[in-house]
Length: 480
Image (cartoon, rainbow, N blue to C red; front, side):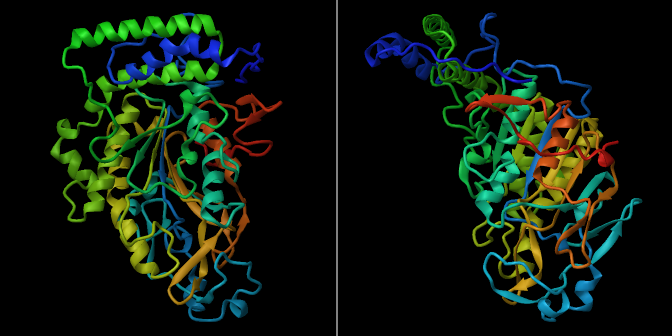
């Protein structure tokens, strides 16, 4: 699945370039304002999002990534540690022993979870009362306890989670998946981010295509109206719009014939053509009026908490997106004034309690809805933040960043349900059994999509680069 090297073309003058591209660029910019139906890619230049066969039979067709911005505390959610109760209030240097450096160097006492843990479902997975609704779906979950990060601060950890490196500018996992497989539906993007209002540290580069062609970057859809700028055609007369679109396509094709293979130009034209088609598809896709009241209630549309309703809309929209063939959908957290993501440096109970209230019922609704519609088996759902939290307090009632261990879960898409994998130490502090890092998670996600992570490469800067760099192992024990 490697791309052909990009060969240098003879240089042209700025005057010739502007003369050659003048009509094409102006028309492309204009075309984004108008809709068109169907795919108009030239047979000689197939759409970059055209579906491509996987390397082997896939278990999942799509991914829904529930990104928990800021880092959910593993010892307050899915990793039960009774020892924290026994030693609550003690000096962790005495109780735990040697401590690693923390991000803010404000080490308090050993702190037990304010939420009770119980074994859930037939599987008996430990889940705390922080997530009572998700807990009811324990038998669908594959909980990984032994994930780690290489970075203790948000920006680099977010880049690592999203792109497999702590550096800015590398392709996101969603871009890699779409590059490898294309999109089933040419009228919607292959990679969509549903922005609940909280862009993670590191900004939009978490969703970038990096050095991959620009066609594979995420399309950002707002959870509010309008979901996307200029999503409604400005032209009042459909026939006039069709004529303008046809002319624009002809001009773009002529420009490509003269220019030859120029990725930036081809991607710009392809993206603008997709944007035009999205004017016809996205308004319908985001129109939830046709969903039954029972479905809306399942997700939490009737909740008294406005941010539950907001995240419910994102989760239901995510289901509609994967129904229509979108390859990779990521949800960001709703922006709640006064609650700094899951980043609970103080007032853990209020921070985590409020964030969980926003996402708990919608996520349960998503899992139940996918299962009822027969979609869960070929949709991989991933729930994860960028790192975990310390088992001892930051100050008096918060928890600091912890890159040495955290929990995440997967559901559907070929993973074994109702199991846990890996272990932390008796404090939930460090991964000690079956330690994993992001490269292993990415390798496993690609494997479930039918992609060998060692073969999905792109030639850049003199080498074949892949999402997992030279690392990563598929976690076969969690695959059904």
